[in-house]
Image 1: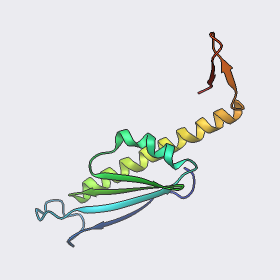
Image 2: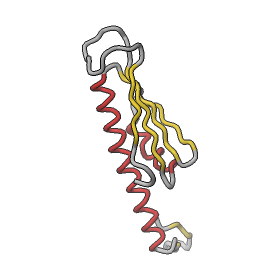
Image 3: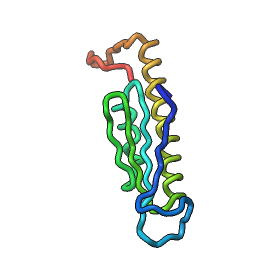
Length: 120
């Protein structure tokens, strides 16, 4: 991954003990995952299909920030873990695509009808 490894800041709203999965008080657990990338907008776009209603992702320059809110600590952990795994995959794909395009010299090719397409 480009930049720093993902850092998770996790906390709970409305107080309470961490790890108590059976509390029925309506409290939510929240975490924010902020990562930096060479092409944050493209990585964030690749993540969009896997987002759930419990996630809110925004791009700020070279950073992606994902706020996660779940009713249980276990659910928060699972969602944050899934997000980080998806981030790593998306970031690697973007890096490999850039390397491929650079090695190809950003070459353009002509198809059979004479139109020029980018080599993607």
